Length: 237
Ligand SMILES: Nc1nc2c(c(=O)[nH]1)N[C@H]1C(S)=C(S)[C@@H](COP(=O)(O)O)O[C@H]1N2
Ligand SMILES: [Mo]
Image 1 (cartoon, helix red, strand yellow):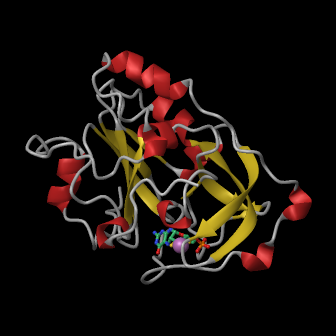
Image 2 (cartoon, protein in one colour):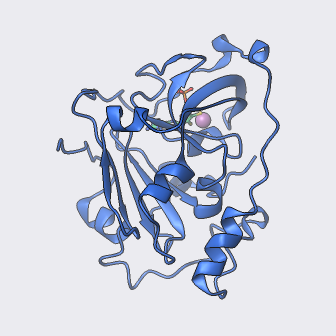
Image 3 (tube, rainbow, N blue to C red):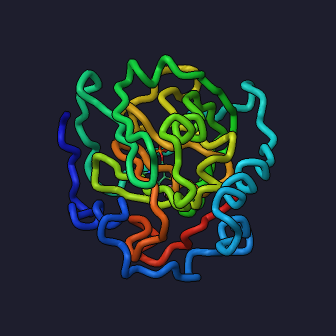
């Protein structure tokens, strides 16, 4: 199993995300916005809360394939593009799950492929209509058998980028782990082998080169590469 390149996040932080040493960290209100009310239902029985999340997802209208704007999707990478050997690549899913997973690209490609044409919106003032193809994240989380305690989803990327999402947004039917763009295999610049793609969040939430997904009970002090520099955590569209 290749070691991910972890620049921004220490092993200790990953362990915190996994819940081994996160007991002292409180669920703060800072990340919760009006759009994330499901996340706030912290006092319901946990199973019921999870079910509420899974049944309250409204699909965002999609565009026709003819609306795709290939030239408008700019490459936006904060540091260097990581080198990932696709044959050695594994997506690791761990934390508040009953079944930790390590999936190769071949494994991922046996799962149902979903395609969508949506708008990607970057806070830096550009947007593009893009077709993404990939696996619904809710499908991967189902395979990992989430524990009722799972409430947040952390994504670690091979370039050191990291992000965290609320469970409701992560299990939205249009939140994909994508390996195709505009009908072609995803390019390395756009996040190959695997990236997040969703019409419900701003561009900086859509991690490229995702290597690890960690389910947590709490939101940690480290929330995301841009979020930790002052950008909004929920970042809903
Ligand atoms: N790992 C990683 N993911 C990332 C970024 C990054 O620098 N590193 N940039 C984010 C930002 S700000 C945007 S707008 C989109 C851009 O995706 P694109 O380069 O495929 O257009 O990726 C997001 N995901
Ligand atoms: Mo962005």
